[in-house]
Image: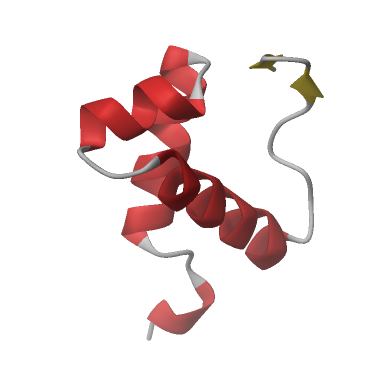
Length: 63
């Protein structure tokens, strides 16, 4: 049986996908109709869940 508690939230995955595709938290926030801070919080939560960094900040951009 699958233990769904070990999977990251769909909201966090959706936020990360949009931010990675658009390479911008602000553009991802606009697309998902949430704030920049909400995207950052979801990505940070995903990083905590995975115990790894999902992105590297490079000034205004990230990879």
